[in-house]
Image 1 (cartoon, rainbow, N blue to C red):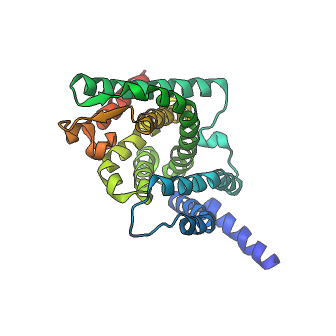
Image 2: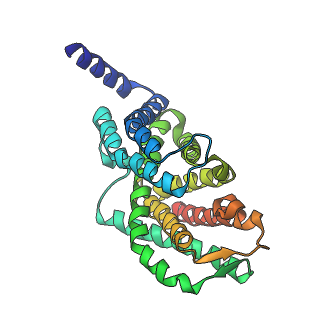
Image 3: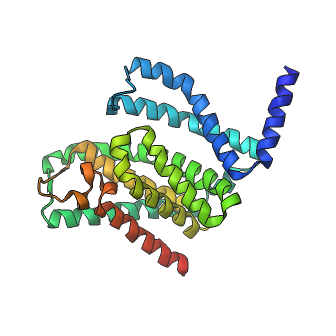
Length: 281
């Protein structure tokens, strides 16, 4: 036992002095190792086949189990590094929550603009009879969006951005953390995610910029991310809109995924321009 503790101590001390890439790889390896004992029984229970795409009923339990253990992995990384949540951008003061609310508002307004234009051009059809279902989903999906977004922001724009910036500088941290953020989505669905990769990379960069605009805090990035998840998931789950057959895929998005089309890219770029102007002043 003493020998095992000695090697663990040596390993932790090596991680503290390791470069950013090693720290990042170690974090995700630790996360994967902790998740596998949960994921394997779940995969068997859900009758998941490696050659078949995941259904929503299969994906959600796996995603929930992976994200449920993420706070413990973040806590372990803090213990190893001797850092605190403040170093990851979680300054939980009232300004932080004002930024959170602002981010949600900007995210929702951006989506509203996109869908208003698509509606004006006759590319989407609204289903008013679905409004009651839409209303019932608002609060539960908001809670889910906030939980998913804060975990991803703490990991990708907090921990990962910090450690990669140590070796690669500010822009390297932004680019590499955004690339890893985008590629991580391939874990769940390769076919539908591939067309969205450029949009996901851009999204990661915009969220990193949001952290810079917010003086290193994650409040604004958390709000933007949660707002986008909230708006899109509510519309999709309630089936409040449907795309017309003549809607151009290059604009609305391949497979009706906004990030796989010009609409989603334009929404992100507009958000980035607003953040850039604010950052400049």
